[in-house]
Length: 634
Image 1: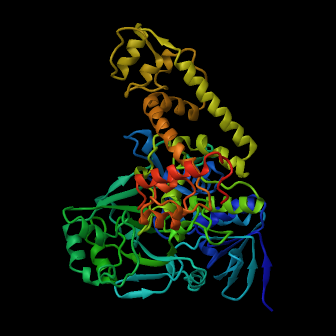
Image 2 (image 1 turned 30 degrees about the horizontal axis):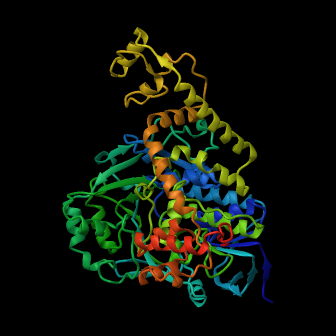
Image 3 (image 1 turned 90 degrees about the vertical axis):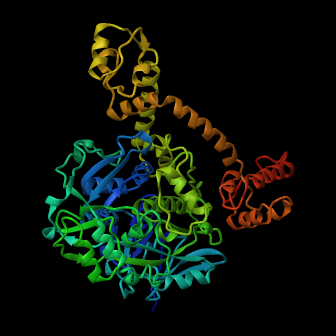
């Protein structure tokens, strides 16, 4: 007898994307089952032991604002925390926390297990079931059938995975876990275009074999800022664990150069394309030959393990070369390797096959997220998983799906880049990819996105009302500060002198003083007697909005222009062949990508500004007088 089960949603994969997708669906009341090749690998962190970082911290904050779990989970399991780029402007401030890997995985597993409507199942999904171009469920390797109304694929790096170092090739997923070897063929049968990508990880070294006296200690922030807007800041003020910094040298580089022919990356054994912005140490030495040294971060993998992650030295060199290479680094002369460094190849999709909702264009009800979509990183994966989960649930519940714009979130930038641009390597989020990054700061993610989480049903009424109140408090205080006059009296001059600020020759508005680089809203409190008692998160927003008022207004004008194109929707049945003046390449790309708006069409590689003009002219001629009759039904 074959097993047959019925669920609303099937999630394939229990990594960072799968966990967010499954939690979103289950929390919205849908019966959800999540499949994993190993229950022990739920929310596994097979590479770096941290969450957040430059631009990635923004993603985690946005996930939290939408009602996701990653921020809450890392707040409970971190061992060190830092706000990066504090010497720069607030647009690029990014929170980064070292995680206790085992605790992070266990805490997320506990969350899944305690969530109503959510079933965890250890099994390999081998087929998707499609009927009349609509998903109908999945089949496991044991031939069990799970019928469902939506399926979300979050397979990470497991599809036909193989790990390589030197001439050793192991057909396994990360950390020696079972690979998923059968689903790829099923996807291809249903017309899904697949890519072959690669990533890698460095060795793990026994802490007891490291000489930290030859390294620079890296401490956490004195005052920890939580990732989740729901976490009480006092609860994350813990005794933090140190990380360490050392460097490669010419001896290290010589060892690598002399053995490049033994690296599967350079020997042609590896087929997949690797991430440009997270290169192996071999790539660094070859591509940056002028560099005398490269940073190496020594990071603990957790409190109850002696394994240390050797950040910056991922490699696929043979085992004997790895020993020689790592032991050439100051402090690692006697290093004992616990786990070898390795490269991993895996199957993923061409994300251009997806709508901005992360639903497949050609298979209704099939969604996907994470590294399966050609991205890299835990945070990028979790963000996509959450959006895929929300939209799968919205489709089943008959509600509007969520598409975040580039102008309102890093998640919007991430997904828009994936579905509109040609990605020939694993995609990594960076602050430079966000055109409106001064508006998309990590500190205001709740103000930008909580309303969407509330509309979807993942944010409580109480939390939403607090955000509305917070918005009003910020606006009211900015308006008040704009009316406060500061005289050039002795008290004011004395305070300015404390901060090496130029004394006043005449009276000014308080806002003018706040805008001075050396001053801020809080330090001017002694000369502002009418100032109300406000929470730090409100004061922070008041300060930033006043200091960067001119720049913020300029970006908001740019966003207005962006919206004009973004809100010009292209009907789903639009006939590009009818637009005679379109270039052949543009017509081919537009038919392939099926953009939902003129704005999205303008970002497709191969579509020129002239092509966009032709589209606008044609649409104006054809659809004049029919406004509102051609909304995009996708």
